[in-house]
Length: 427
Ligand code: FES
Ligand code: FE
Image (cartoon, rainbow, N blue to C red; front, side, top):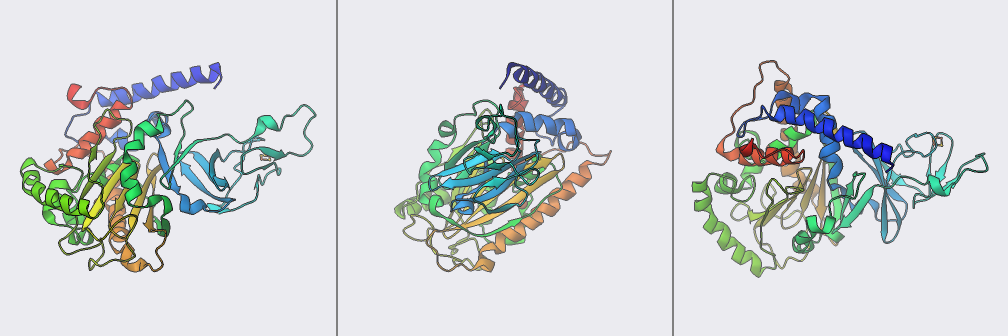
């Protein structure tokens, strides 16, 4: 980055931080945020600069780019990133911006190409991003200096992470390395996508995250989801390890511990991750039982596909893994669902779900597999959009959280810490 650019970016960072600092001064712990956090373009610009643009975001799973030339576009904010495989061992991420006059190069959401050719004046790039052909250019033009701009990329157990940072991003291995045993157990590196669906949602990204990190709404909004889980588990652990009222946690903990002993005998690595608000990605890993007698998160509790990964048998468990507020994974014995929450603009967020099954699975009952999360996500889309619409009213004011919504407060503390602001308890 040039000195002029880095000075400008420094000024932008200060401006963005001051926008959030001014609003944060009026924010109360234990309450929803003020309207501007959900509706204001200046806040969204600050979020892109300081939060979204600096995190490792999952763009997809390697099954989308199995063969050389396979590509897909990952859009976040105003950015479009080309994820393309250039050989057996390399997946690249390039900004979808032609080095000639800036046109998008790829316009189809996904496809297979031998080269990347811009439709405007036909500049052509290799799958490694090198500029291969540019017609009628002056003699002093250097093709070598006009390759595609690269985006940080890392593939980890089948998940393709990108990072939009202009600087060196936060260290990947330090951020996620300890999750390896869990990802390995579920066989994510070799998993395949059995089904996917998009649920574009007209709401600010924070409302989507807030909704996902509390289970206060599960009873009223999600009959299918609740039917697959013990009610005590949803109260005590519904939004993360010990996220419910202390009394409920104490009552349910022995059940979880007994299950952990059984599950460990069937090969499952036991453990919990519960990052604090000062962490870079606010990760969470929780494993617990589904409803008694159920082998899978399906309507009748029976499997929709073969066992996933290194399981030795059905253990009645499920894993909830949050790589960051933007990426969630829920895994049961025979399938997993990857949730991508990708901010596009102030009040528009892409919600994309990918159902993953074991790489060797030969028969998948797709209807059975998607029964729970497809319905649940449609419900979440509706309630979140209604939440956004209500917040637009002049009568909206921040409301008090219940004891089941503590993790929403944790998310807010993490959000403010991205701007270098003190945690809410210190404000
Ligand atoms: Fe791409 Fe001209 S803008 S070739
Ligand atoms: Fe929900």
